[in-house]
Image (cartoon, rainbow, N blue to C red):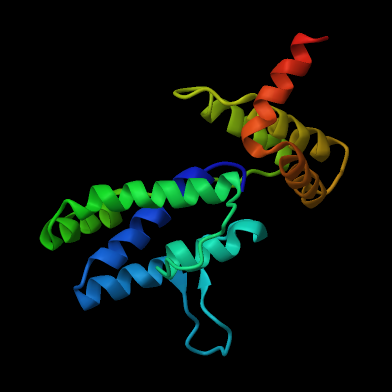
Length: 191
């Protein structure tokens, strides 16, 4: 996936919080199936439909998807903090509404919000599309642009995208995802 992670994550957070707040059994079951895939024919545990990085998997699965609020990390990562804080804010907003309103909102969300899947022939095309689509509204960060360029160059040089993804994750781990754009700007200013 090249783009849409934030939107899919936000939708998942909203659906998970709605599932926790709504007591109607049918609506709750429908929402639960949308965020947590259960294969009745397999003996494997349920898996969230949205896959996150391994280092945030436990918090995302337990805190957001399963609604278990105990055992939050003592020192959460930047991304874990985003999950925790955004989930809390969504919950505070939705908690101000009665169940009938929440069900109407859920019905609206599920009937009028669409996820569009666009597949391109190669990674280079997908990243060109990414740049075009994201050239509106909120500007991309330097980190987004660097990552995009790396994936584009990897395709040209026949480097597996999984290698770039792994190296990018290592870079985020070392520098911190919130600091990548700052580090890039500072290094450009010193050139």
